[in-house]
Image 1 (tube, rainbow, N blue to C red):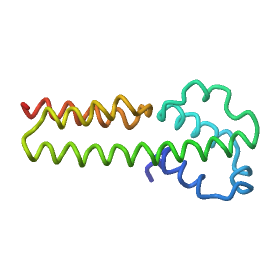
Image 2 (cartoon, rainbow, N blue to C red; image 1 turned 180 degrees about the horizontal axis):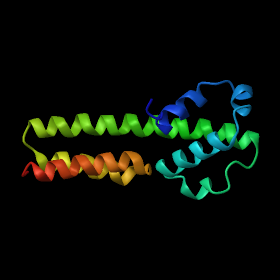
Image 3 (cartoon, helix red, strand yellow; image 1 turned 180 degrees about the vertical axis):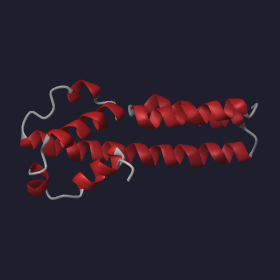
Length: 125
């Protein structure tokens, strides 16, 4: 069976009540959260994580929020850029991704936006 993506594990952890979540702290969940923190641009906090149970719970909640916000923002950017692409306005489509990249700190979501920008360049527009 393929390994579960760290964001799926994050969502499963975030779905737990605080008391249940605090009971899930172990080497595996800490390692998962450290990888998630790096992917979402919170690298500096990852090395000393967690300070305590409350920090673990708060960080899971914060990373889940950042992941969801990044996904929503990226989805909106893809839809908007696609609309400009359908109108054959690749400059405006690129501007949408550039704006997203300027606002987003998540490495994961930024890489997807960069890929979309490369695709626009490959399309010749």
